[in-house]
Length: 527
Image (cartoon, rainbow, N blue to C red; front, side):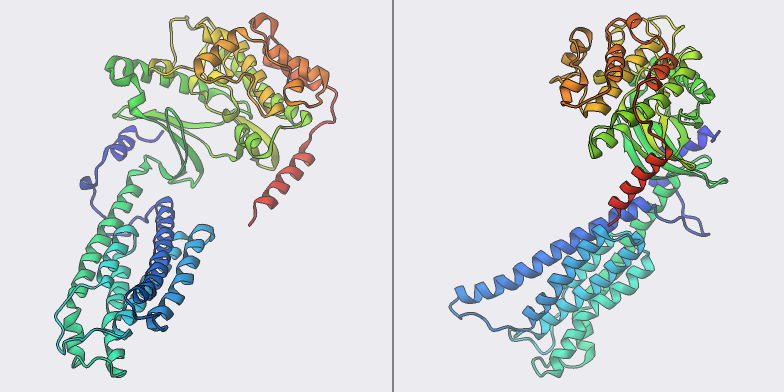
């Protein structure tokens, strides 16, 4: 198990606690670079807008001042090039599959190109009378170099080189103006003296770039949790976040779920200790489950700072909620294929005397495992509870002040706070089946209280009537049987439900059909 103290130190460390190693520096996390590349796109789009508005406004101002429409000059030509280039960079940052680090290098090139445009525009356009020996000044180019350093995490050496080239564009513009005879400012030294404040700003930009890069490296270090290194954020919910992770020795991909410390005990030290104790017990039980359709738990622990974490297998595919939301209701044959695998997972847990208590589409993952497609994994056994527990005993989530279960999929006995067993999960499976077949939850309600009341009292509309579809009669009967208010009127075990589903007369959904579906989806997702 990863050392809990190391994990806790990583989570609690502040930037001041870190020292950058003299060896090979940690790379900035990929998700931060990706976010930075998207910021670059926003900057490019803003640049396009400024170039366009500035160019048009210059002509409008000339007209308003009574000078007529100004003929085209260098400002128009520069703007005519800068606008499409900026828009092109914006779309490139949004849709390119290139490494974000490469895109950020393009950002430096874009900064230099913009600086060249500004240098030419300022010094080659018909200027007001210039002094022969101009006073030093800070130009827009110097300010732009500082801004780029602050918003884009770039290697300080690259910032130095690109910054020096960028601020040199003003002297270059002055030299071109002198060669054209529009401005005699003296020698090259005068051009450099005029813009020496910009060169000083390059030094400021390098310092800022070093700070930004260091912060990114500190994030990388903070994400090293014992034997695992955290990567991109995969998702988040009411209790915490899920990150992609890699084992430092095995290079095995994993997913780490962090349970936020503020959800443990709700500030009550005694409640927090009770929650952690039960978390350990429940995690140990969940880790012992061996059904191939139960998500594999690699590791778990509690840090000194009361942060709870699960290390799980990383899955390829999507959950049922996303599947239905993106592709619509699932046909009966495929729904049966998926539900029987869910039953396999639950049957083992129920045989061990455990109830999942939060079966819902978001906790049922469908995807690729090895060479098998449409392979189901039941997720999030964090609310698992022993049927032997007394009604007054609560799981880790309940002890943390959270209501177990999800209202749209909660059995009536759970709503009433009664003793529950595996039949509560059977009810939830019925709700999941209803959602898969119709694309709608069993009961619609404006709030959770109304939802829970309808689960206790309202009769569900048969799915075929609700969605105006044709379903095998026996399948619909099974779904409604799972949704019976009284537990003893439902299928009594997950194995019994699985056998009944297998007996429904439909053309079987098999691996070949699953492969065809997933290949078609991947083809449709390709740009």
